[in-house]
Image 1 (tube, rainbow, N blue to C red):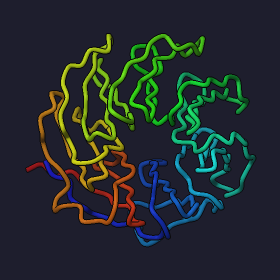
Image 2: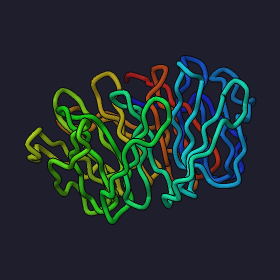
Image 3: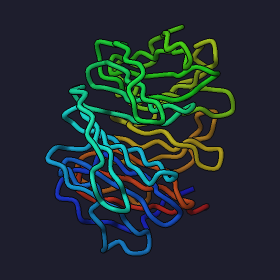
Image 4: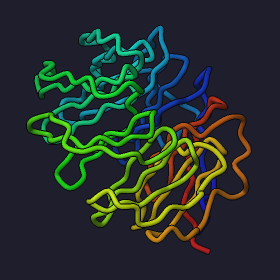
Length: 286
């Protein structure tokens, strides 16, 4: 398998930190320039600015039901946007030293702070719980075996009961930083600053690990039962569930800096990078 670049989307004025699909044709992006942009897959030269903030944007979550976007900033605050009207509905001041992830899981919004705190909001956007979880930045979250697994910059994974919000278990997965988590077929896959991918069972036992990239791995995604990893080493790679190498971006991804975020979408991979560009790679079987 190979990932071949089909489209390049240019318009940001600084590194792009996050990319997020909206539907089968449109996606969002944001980064250091504070611009939240909406793109049309078929029109790489055109973008619509949903909002322009005066601070870098680290995370996005979009609710298609309400046409609302949660925006997490470097300042550690949340901006709630009406996407169609391109207006800000409200701002939630958390001062969390960066909001690195926002996810909607089991009827609640889970917000990961750079101050090591977990913030939980209900569907009415009210803060219902705040947990001082770690001395390090919280970076990743996924539901696994009925528990919320949250990875931090110290390399730990915390297992939290989603009903009581209590920490029921924890273990060290990387040294340091757990940047992303992926659940497939009853196992937990993790990646970190060490450039490794690791596979864990429900008892926190390591099944296997591979030195997958030369530098930090920021994203793990599933594509057709395979694992897609993207890294600071400017490569996107494909692996099987046993850690075997299958393919990568071709030719070499010759950009300056890092691939900061990627999403499997429309039979390929969307990637956001430090060179101010977004790229779509389609999957080719060879």
